[in-house]
Image 1 (cartoon, rainbow, N blue to C red):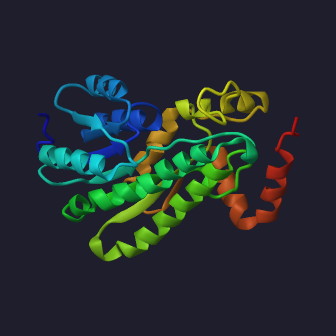
Image 2: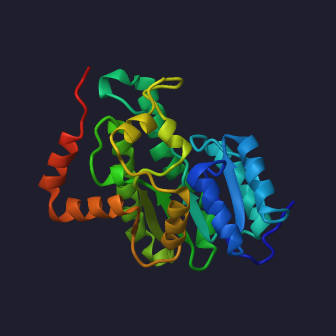
Length: 269
């Protein structure tokens, strides 16, 4: 089994693709030992092979399942000597479409992965984080967590929840020496942009973004901001100029940004 051998370590959920995989590449290049976790074990194996022998461990993890978390954390602890410098709660899913067209079961899944999965991760990893000097939790939220996003209503609600959890725990964990921050990207070029209203839906979010001329940022930018969130003094880290603008307007001109959002809602057909 691979071992950290004194290197700093990061535990990454959703590591088989997208922001999670790119963050693993960045941290590994900077000398960190990576724990890679996802339901897509084939994708995890590809990322682990890319990082090179001895630089990571990986295992299947359904973030909804506390038993999965216990096994994953136990294996990570064996590889790192019982430490965890960063927990990157990154796994997330979405459903895109009119609220009434999305099944209740799909909404349940989004809430279970995006909110309960993050809570499960903090609970499972807290003992290792408490045992590690200068430990940090980075939760992937979204710009949709500061501005309510039409046709992403439940996804947006989960990201507001992650933002609130981040702020509450950052205060609560003060005396434990653990910082809690969030990554808040704009649209990033990852597989999540293929989400539809349901599994197998033909209409994808990526198509609508392209049709509307929306900016989509490279995954490398999100990974760099994840690095910043793991090291900086702020609490929320925006990824993309559009994200920075949304953050500014939500604070200083909330009425204006709500009007702009309403204008962008397409007509119902």
